[in-house]
Length: 338
Image 1 (cartoon, helix red, strand yellow):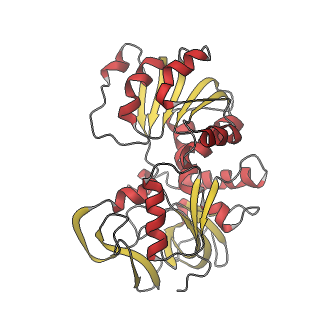
Image 2: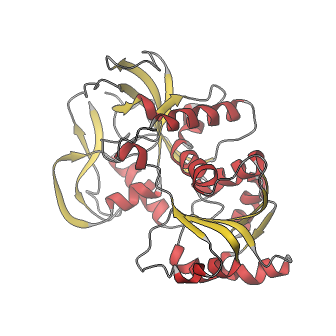
């Protein structure tokens, strides 16, 4: 099969950052779906995995953790899907990714794709929807009855965009997002944020709104940069959750006096460790698909590249690394031959 892959971990502006290669067609394991990929989107995890380092792969490594496609074959233990089904998923970071004509994915982390969305619109969402859902409803523990104030730091990014929608539509929380540019502020409001403040003047602008404390904080980027402000703003017994790594240790002592809960979210944990509840991601994606088909949620697609090539994939990585993306960038793979 045809794939866009890497053997060396190079800067995204290097002419050989990605290569086109031919790999053997994958064979499904017992619970695997073999999917012909129709669209894939780019996430920060792609750029972090590809980041320059001395390691060299003996065989080409395929990245990509978001896909919509058609099931062409199934493993002998598969019960949830059949050939011909249109599915969506974020995949497993320990397995070959979606930048290829064919991909294997465990049925427990895939679901039927939303019927009302195109392949491109749907491909924008799996990884970010899983991340946001697990953070809001599993880590922080929000419910449909939850009230209070939720701050989402990084509201215009892929995760922030769907997190705003989920919190606004499925809870009673007042949703406050951070954004610093006019276009990102407008985007957050369009996603459903009640208020938007600048992360550069976080405490000052919240004070201007009469807000001195928050019930929950979801940090999607630069955790160390916002740590002191979050520790100051979170209420006693509140909850802070982050998906962003840090190059420096977090001072958890700042949370002690308030008995604050701090947690981290990594949406690949279930597949990486084959946890007994892996199928929860299948269920979660099914719920999100239903909400999209009902018009409760909408796609966060904002940018499309017409084909998958080494050059277009490198371009997508550069755009994410620039740190100015609004919503999600998706690559059309409908013409990507196997």
